[in-house]
Image (cartoon, rainbow, N blue to C red; front, side, top):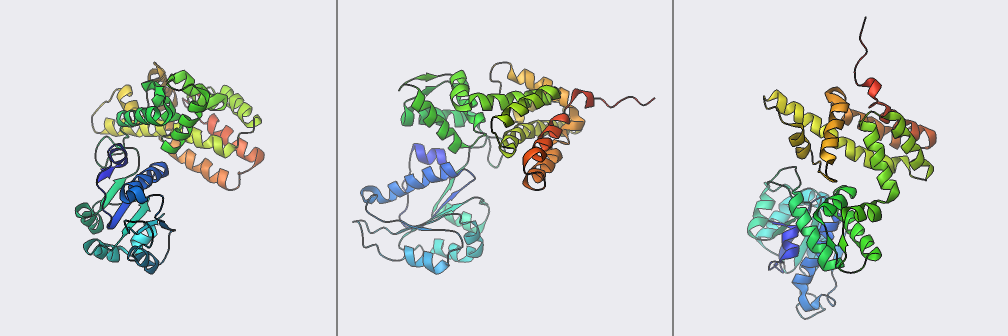
Length: 361
């Protein structure tokens, strides 16, 4: 089993028969890997041989006929079928796919799936005869949830240099990655935007990334979140008003707000779980486990103060609050002042005045 970064950096010999599975949540990585696999298999016939592409829920017969038919084009005679969104196809035809691994077809079937379990019989068979490529940001350990940001930085730095002739500072790469909310496709769009505005071989700083990729609206949203979690509700709502007046949709704003607040919720649960296990973790260690980064310098210390301002009682409720707002913005409060009110109420939940319950006399 390979990670997408490994395959893209040093493409291995890829079989021209059998099954190849590209699995994971990052569509950008899936498409990069798919392109590389096709180029590796077809070689000089890449521009000549047509590749049959199928959507989900297509019949088994259509796929099997395609990869067992000898190509009439190109010199290599390779027949390739690409099946996108293949999760339901895998579930429906798992037994037949297992048999196909044991008796490979004349051509190559490439399946793009979102979820993939490596302990299944099909996955174990492909480990011996086939190819499985993980298409999501790499984790710090097998099966873990924490993204290996060091490896992501290294790969992004190489891609920025090779594809866009940009040299990007390490802290700037973290800024870019977080602005994109850990979506590598959005990171790529950011690199393209930087490339348009800066000269080749430019040395790109974190401030330039923030200015070019984030813009004032993104910067204002971060400030809104800082004001909110610090309990400064009036300033948060004032910032929210400016963003809404500029034309930002409440649903779009909520996406970035929710992404940030989920990290505070995660940090709260990490801290409480460790405490219950008798392990009193320093707040900086908790924030690190929850994927907070110390950029610009001193940001982690500010996040620690914000954690204390939120408190454990409210921190434990954040997930539920976000679920409630999400449902409202998709339902009865999806438009106009109703949507605005949902966001204002969410900001108000972090008010300093609500941090400590009033004393009962």
